[in-house]
Image (cartoon, rainbow, N blue to C red; front, top):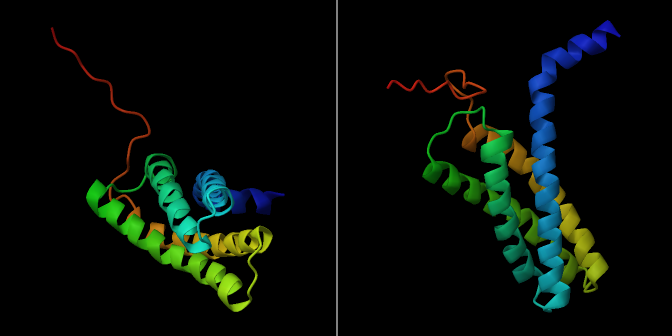
Length: 158
């Protein structure tokens, strides 16, 4: 039991960070899937166009959640830089989804909603692995100085 406790203590910050990343990711996944199906099945847009719209909306949500909650303890290197890198890396992750969906529809000739949703889930899974690694490496950098958990008291002289 002592081994498990020491192991947890060693990886505590990683476990918490992964839990937060997973929570934001789960919400973004439901947003992505809902928007994807709305446009694919509701508006009968093509699967690739539906995926681009869904990813754009869910990535915007994920950026805010990850910046201000998951990785708030990391260095803030400027909104413009982070936002650009975040969406560039999400664009690369989107390619995973588009390749899987495109392969399903245009190579396997599976056009039904279930097959396209399974392809979407597989693409999201591959993209998630890439996003977690790339956000930590390039977008939300390690803090060079400790970031306080709470804001300091503001002294009001009268």
